[in-house]
Length: 232
Ligand code: CA
Image (cartoon, rainbow, N blue to C red; front, side, top):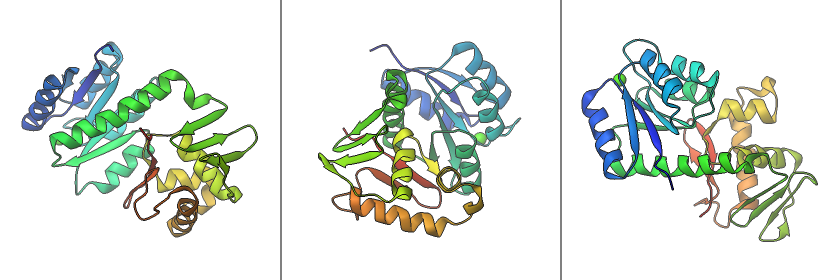
């Protein structure tokens, strides 16, 4: 497998060094940028496989960086933000980021996020996102017939549960915000009703997860949203 090329955007030198040292030790290639303008330029000229993007940059806002890069590229973007910047994190995800890391983070967390993103990258490059059927662990969705199966048994889903499952499946590996899910499943009029989403998610999980208390497929991101995980 050819080495993954990562663009590290971080103005804080100690954090940047922690990241690049970790990447070097785990055989990733990388380039760095210390502000938003150079991040956009580096992204355009080096065509990285993954971008690690700090949201608090000295020149332009991290969310603005995402919006600009999304103008021409679907490159996976993992944002890095301080714990106090929860709203920035949500704005970043809504602008098209794939995942996030909260400072302070451990080397293990960083590597875990990179692994999830690499699996998503493999799915994107394999073109499976557009395929007529979806398979993940024991879950199978036949988009053409509108049926979902778990371990070969048809799942009895309501239309909303099915839409919710398909949206998560089509974005496997990506964190979807409450707002994004509500807009895509119910339309924008329900934009603020996170409570209803939680109820539908609970009923979907009862049908999907063997142990709804410790879900394997759908991960909860408290205060942010949900993600479908790729089962090994
Ligand atoms: Ca910063």
